[in-house]
Length: 505
Image (cartoon, rainbow, N blue to C red; front, side, top):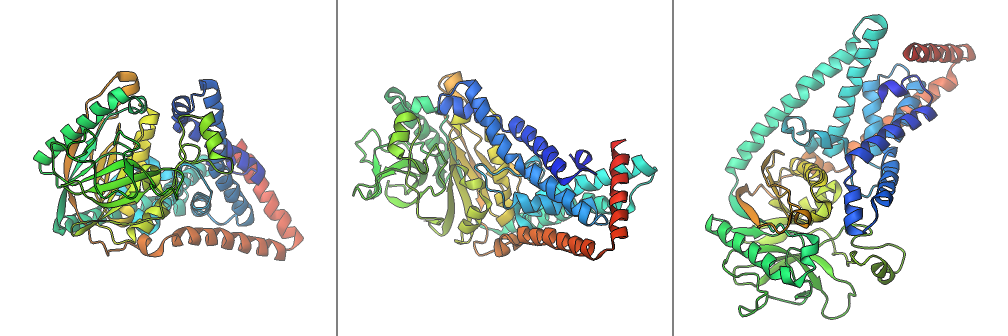
């Protein structure tokens, strides 16, 4: 992309960047078609068109960043690409509205050494480093191709990034690991039910689904689990719980959760308001003690548009048109779930990839993040791994472990260094037939709930600084161009045209 936009007009760079983004998003997030064919029962041709529209919008991230980069290059030719490009990228990535967050840093999710700077400026700082590194490499290649010389400032910048970023990562990982060792630990068992969307809608399968999760819960309890976590809406009875309930069904009921085990459990359930004040149900994470008493609950706040709520139009009409959709009432906001001496930071579905929302939860003085998710809609696509990859950054940003229970995988334990210590397979019962439930137990450090990283303390400050950097460079260049004589402006334009022609040739 840098080669394509170098020396072009801002309008052309906007187009080239947008094309780059469209290709990237359409290819990388093609799992959206799987969601639409399963969820809305769209034919593949229609689903592909919707996926392209999705990619066309999110391609603006690349397009606008390229446009700003080229504008700054025209206004301040002396300012190097490895400075302007990352500033432009972060300015756009930190502000462009989106349905699913798309971060450049996703490509580094599995490289803990390279993502530790997320504690300083969130996931966007990692993305900015990636862009700066690539811009520096491009500048070096361009200089060598044109003059058979290496651009010395670019080489120094690249060298500092290649040594400094993983060096900082190694130091911080060692120190965080020491803190993990010194922290108290809680053994958490994760239950992956491996149930499909279709199975959950058939009465004949629900009893088996519940029994399978109970079986695995008993096994994990025998392995020492002090707390069990089930996935999002994993409890297979959507009308059993109300907001006013204080305990689970009685011991005589076949729908009782605690059967065969006594460990406390955080379970994804659908709840309703028995008073009738709220018309629609809630997507809830309900915490039960060993006797089945409800000791806490959290309602999902950020609902998935078109899947869990419909804006503007009448929800009842939409539900008739798309029977597999739902319309949920939102929860009141971020909160902590007290569990003994600890505080859990709960998230449901894709809330664990929303950096600003997770930061609000971290401010509730939590010891650990827990996520309940249902990615069964996507089957064996890239989505479950991408979802996990984006969630990894939350652990680094706040130095809290992230424990994820996902109905069909990937369930995982991400430690406070961003290392994915345990992860499960992805199952697809809709296409592979009934699958047995599975799970694992991890000894999770309960990190200092009052500790704040730089990002935890300053929030979006890094993004704001990048935006101010773009504005400052642009203002300085514009002011200098206005004060320049006509001959100086013509000389600058000629130099720019010569540079563009040499790049083209």
